[in-house]
Length: 341
Image (cartoon, rainbow, N blue to C red; front, side):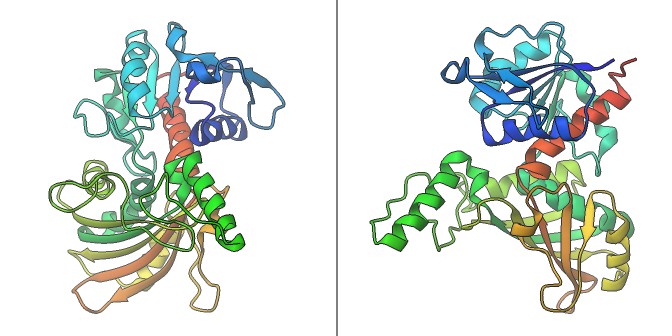
């Protein structure tokens, strides 16, 4: 016996990945609905590689009564309109937008990190999925924090254009082609040229000079992992299609060496340690695409602080950073609360 699952925003990058991963992981489904805005109503999309075609329905007219879970990948605007009515109809919402992440009555979940927090979902019937860059960071930090207690984290991100949706990917492609043939390059989605460039600006600027993306990483890491950890982030958009990278510097309360950290990470859930101190002995974004893991490389001791480590962290942002984590939340919810059969 399976679940009735609705995917909201099914025609976008993350929504399509959600459908792919539900199929790949053989999630127990009796019925699946693909929902989107009226613009996409009637179009057909494939459910994973099963060959089953789903006709896209208008979310505005969809009745969530009798559906078990709704995976939202539609952005904060549509989520604000439709998530509350889905939740009120008894359908548990797993939301990928930033709308509910810092709501104290909504659990913010990375299953490898804080699975017990999911028990609080009944307050709103909503569960939040973290920001893509936060998700991979906390997967790498959790096992180290359990061992040596993290005091402070300094992280610089190298975030792919797919984090800005299809428009971001199209802009990188069009600008790259235009530069090769000598055409003028005009930014549209991004604030500056993204092809052959990097942009230290993701989301809006806040009063303290940080961006909202950087703020998200700080507050979400604290909510998921430990409110006592000090976090500072610099988030940068880079000309990579898929896959976020992070250079992470960690200061601990207790002593921990690089060799021990490697041993811990090698056994940690959701982590794949690939760390050879030789040419190519690390993972780059190109190699992580399509994979479920959070890859960690370049683990080394930082002699400038007491009990310090630095590492390199890479993950497919459309998967672990968004769609995979949402499906893992659905699996966790099913095991703990919505058991079938």
